[in-house]
Length: 264
Image 1: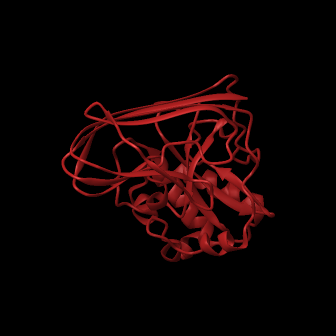
Image 2: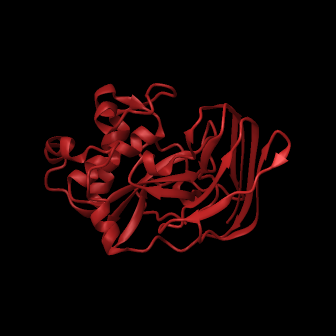
């Protein structure tokens, strides 16, 4: 499997700003070539790379005001090893979090999925969310969590993932969010999916059914969208004036929704 991913961002930065980007393939991906550049008013900027325990690569620096152009491209040959099972993760990803209010949704989860376990539960939750939500771009706010998504019955990929994660955590299944490049996604964008820990392994869950899971490429991993944002900034304001994302694969697979898949 050969995947090529790119993204292009244009930003209008209003003042001195601390910036953190999360747009590159995660550490451990089978990257064969890669370029990343940050250019402010024609001048290249030097970024520091930080890596978290899941292999998320963060690129951070302080920028002055001006127009910034960000470009990333990578070729990835083959699949990376599946995510390892780590005891600490099995504690962290059972807890409620900012956008995944599993404590509030526990009565709903127990009522809807009583008696289900393991992979049968994963399939049931994924189908339940897919059937009850409508994918409507622009229908949710950045501050909406799983509770609001369930009430609204619509959202985008991050909303679907948040609801899946919250329901699974409410039923004692560790679950987390993963930002990915997703060949086959239309319209093309960064994509958000869930990972759930069952039978000693992490399995990718995507209730949107918008792209084949086997060709997805991990970018970042965390509790919810607060940990997986492609850009975080502090101090001054900025405006994202243009963004384009591309993810292609040499042989796009068909996604069997009943098949167990691990991100690679």
